[in-house]
Structure formats: structure tokens, C-alpha cells
Amino acid sequence: MLTLHPITGGIRDGRHQQYPTPNIEPRSVESEQAAEEAAVRLFSAYGSISYLTLSGEGGERIREYRRCHFFQFKSPLRDARLRVAAQDATTQEPPR
Image (cartoon, rainbow, N blue to C red; front, side, top):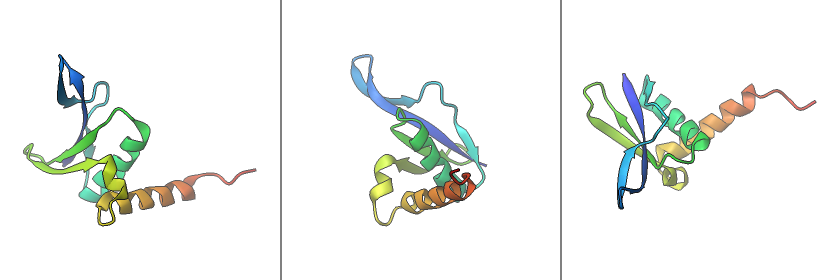
């Protein structure tokens, strides 16, 4: 099982630090593809998340996702954003 950890960066105690995002719990995901899609949704829902780290069962860091990855040509988050948008478009009700 993999886990996505939301991290916030900012000034805390007078210096710039990175720390777990308050009030947002880490999310368990089944695969890296599910992690990418969850990252897209988390970035869209919460502006306070600076980046997400993906860790394995042993706590080892596997990958890091940042908002800027949406715009990089070879980023997996760019493709995941398109998949999420397509899923959301098919699940929405048509306008009346």
C-alpha cells in the first residue's frame, strides 16, 4: 500500500520550513497511477498543499508531486490531469 503525504511550505517559527499540511490526513492509494490521480484532485481541492510525497509501506520516499508538474510535457501528472478531467466529464449530469 502506498501513501500520499500532503506537505506545506511556509514561514514557521521565523524561518522557512516544510511540514505536514494541517487538517489534511495522508491518503492511502493502491498504485502509482491512483496516486497521480489523487494528487491531481488534492491539488485542485486544497491550495494550501505545496507538494505531495508518495511513500511505500516501509516509509521510503518513492516520488514527489508538485503543482508545476501539471505543465511539464513529460510529467505523469499532466497525463493524470487529463484522465481526471475525462472521468469527471463523463460522471457529470448533462445541463437541463
